[in-house]
Amino acid sequence: MKKNLVILTGAGISAESGLQTFRDADGLWEGYNVYDVATPEAWRRNPEMVQEFYNLRRKAVLEAEPNPAHYALAKLEEKYAVTIITQNIDNLHERAGSSNVVHLHGIITKAQSSKNPNLLYDIEGWELKMGEKCALNSQLRPHVVWFGEPVPMIEPAAKICSRADIFIILGTSLNVYPAAGLSDFVPADAEKILIDPKVPDVYLPKLRTVAEKASVGVPSVVEELLKRS
Image (cartoon, rainbow, N blue to C red; front, side, top):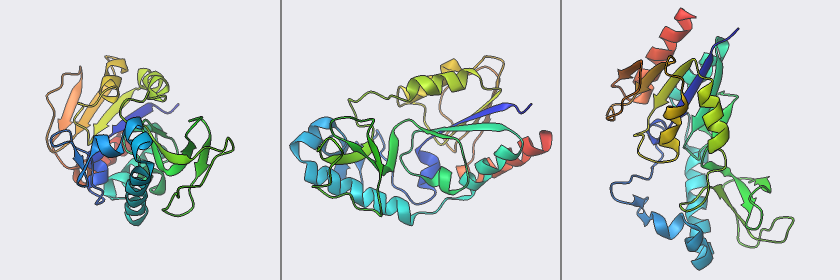
């Protein structure tokens, strides 16, 4: 029986594919104040600007390519029961071949109803236009969890973490909640590996740290795990 291997990924892995990421330090994302483009209030105030912002982010995602870290993680499915829990809104894990990805904050290649967030639609190409509506006749918006909105996948993610035999933390500072709290659900006796060039100040039992960027550290750890199994 395959061991359960759970991987929590953050902005660091996408950054190596050239995607700019929001950082708490300056509160800016591609030059925009995040509260002007990533809140329900921003959508109500200026939906055209919010739509344009995410159209450009979607275009960048579609032009980006998975990097060696994405491809290495996909290889783990040969020997392990792998679930990737990602804070990222891109689809690079799926494009690299990972088959079981939980998107905590949504995925930018889908649209959702402004009235019912459970009504989801695939977006053709990179542009979601004003005037495109759902079955309830409301404007379609990006399928992205904005600041101030609930994170509906956090409870399923916590259950997945509670069954982990091996838990990998990758490219995340563990500063953004509720995602940062997922490590609390991982069994104490599970093996834990943190890969990041700037190792955050975090204590977890049985934690091993690899102070490398994702494209270097991940292939090395994956090779070790595949040999071990």
